[in-house]
Image (cartoon, rainbow, N blue to C red; front, side):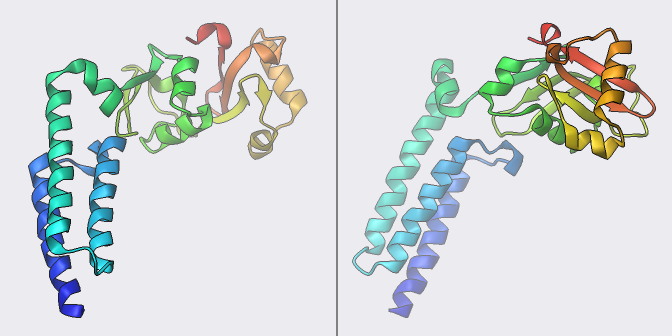
Length: 216
């Protein structure tokens, strides 16, 4: 039993490495959901064969070979035919276009604004004010273009209003209250908080506000 498991592991490893090399080299940041699925099934095929005695090594190799051919064919087809690429591999999305947040694209990507801000912070960007374009790549990573003349502030901004709602917890973090917020928005010429898609605030920069009408 144990020698059989050893040989299955060894042959499975060699077969998986061969198929992976055949399909091409990719950084982890370039892996798409489609790539993840085919890798998952490849690994599952080997696992099933290893722990089930009625699954033979030739059957495992046949399964890996068939799955590898199918995936290789899909890769080549998507390279050749653009119409197949989007439904099978996905496409990038523009989440911020010329400084305007795309509400539609955020919803299509199942992202909330605060999640996008978190992704930007991982890129050392702490305010939406600095951002001109944000692309969500097929890997789930974001690519960012900042305004050339926009310098980063020394303090991160805090999101105080999100889709017309006051974020009470963030107000507490900022050490402020609702009256202070409403007075500040009033000075910015805003009377109805439901008009605001988002409002950031930081000590050095003050408010940065975008109304729904300024989004796309």
